[in-house]
Length: 428
Image (cartoon, rainbow, N blue to C red; front, side, top):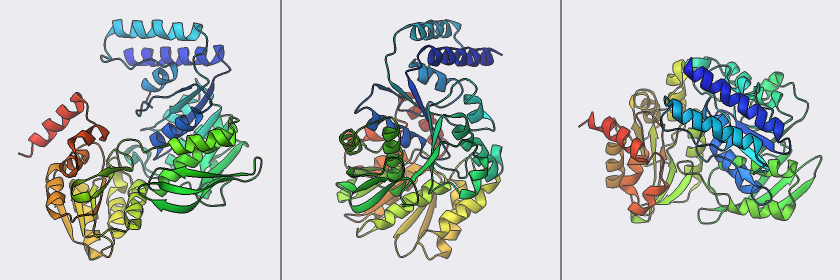
């Protein structure tokens, strides 16, 4: 009851805040994967013209999303009545004060049916960006059709919507009722798209950001990121910028400032002049396959893929892990290293059947030690894992060139380090 009261009160404050400040544009980002990278890319580009508020973490849940919109910090103690009274006071002050932002970019997540549609009951976004429809939290959703209905609901309760054409099956168009929808992606079939001209790890992608239809423009841009799915996040950001009236020079400057978010296709320097692709924040079938495709594109003497179990897939887990194992290519990978029970049970056998050399470990620490022992100078190593029980960022630490780079890894707060220490101690 207490949590329900808090949630309803916060939602009421958000509704009043947006009503009191109709000049503020609310942009939301939802989808199965890529929400945080897309949100940060949007904020990066919009900051060239507007005052922008966004929380760089994944504060997208029932209580944290309203607080992020209001620009109020999440309390340390959720059960403290005094803390919530202070938050309510801050919310009322925010409502009654002049606008301090032009645009709010908010991530909206869902780990159960109805959470995204519920967001639309207290906030009407100006733009909704839907990044993907793929397997997520399948223990709750059960079917991909249910996932699609959940994520695409955001497009229907928003004034305008941008849909990732590459990662959302066209059959789900039946879920859309909003007439003001455009698509984005890396193919010319999308109204907003990017055409790659060149890529290097040092400089990222160079190419043309193009728009067909209403705006019909082309801008030569540089994107200092890695991976096709990272390009899509940048294209979505450019599309939002155009919808909000940004000029070409503002967009070009914004594109040049986009960088990888920690733990999401972040390129780090490893020992022995190795290249680390740190994609350790979380994992899903779509994200894992995209990360492997990026690894395969690198011209290096050795490639190693460290793949952790993909959590929250429910009954779809065996088939999903097997599918990733089947795209592990023995001609591209010197080693496939798995961490976690699901990856060992389903992904590893499929990769072996492809001729891959596969080793499996219970913990990230063991996997990191193996990689350190097995890597060749100049190798490229992909670390792709989930949160609960996998924690591949701790494997990354073992092969980093410098401990100073540890600040670029995910889950490094004292609280998270204690959680991981307790977890790893069970295997000693």
